[in-house]
Image (cartoon, rainbow, N blue to C red; front, side, top):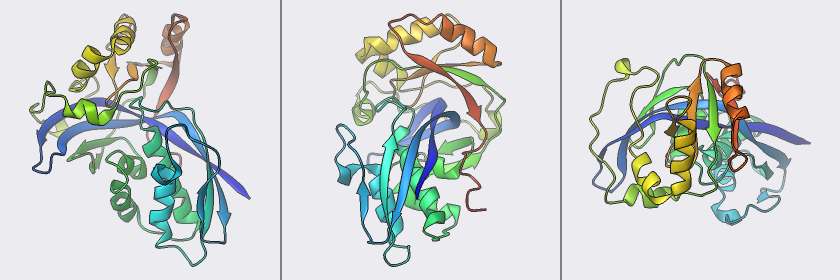
Length: 277
């Protein structure tokens, strides 16, 4: 039997770089909001202890695929013989700042935790997820979150209902290169979770990306006609928030043919948040 599970995208409603650790990792503050645009992860259980990927993912060898690595991490806690075949239906762009690969990996952890009857607590899965990347834990956490540290210190946050217009510039932005940029602001003043409200903050990575990728600047400028437009993560995708679906879709209808985008609703919880409950 083949099971299918969603792997939703995220938006960084703001992203501040507030410092840097001795090991070079950047200290961040951000608010993560899940949205209802998603990849689909297909899982077929095996009894031969093998973890394999069905199909190709351009530019990503199987051993570097986060979904394969996630399954192999969890496999150490699974019953003898537990294996899985993994196939992805990709909707979320790679290098877009929507967290697609991280979300795919988190969905594998959440789903196999139940399907393999491992039943690890969420906190343990989050610690495991951090070994895969800084964005993976928030998808396991599974709700709107105020994030600190390198992105792994997560606290729940309520956010007002919102619809987002998300534009996808036709570029892939390498996260590591943006964080390594000498001109990146690394000393934004931190603020407390109690002070956050929708529309606060900014994205410290945005000026660096805009200066290097004219297409991101063009998409921000166009979307900025209709509201405050921001980049998510390290780019390239940009978004603006609207109070109603009709307002968001009215903006999307005006999108030039040279641009691509979609409308998505903010999610309070990951679709698999209570999967094992």
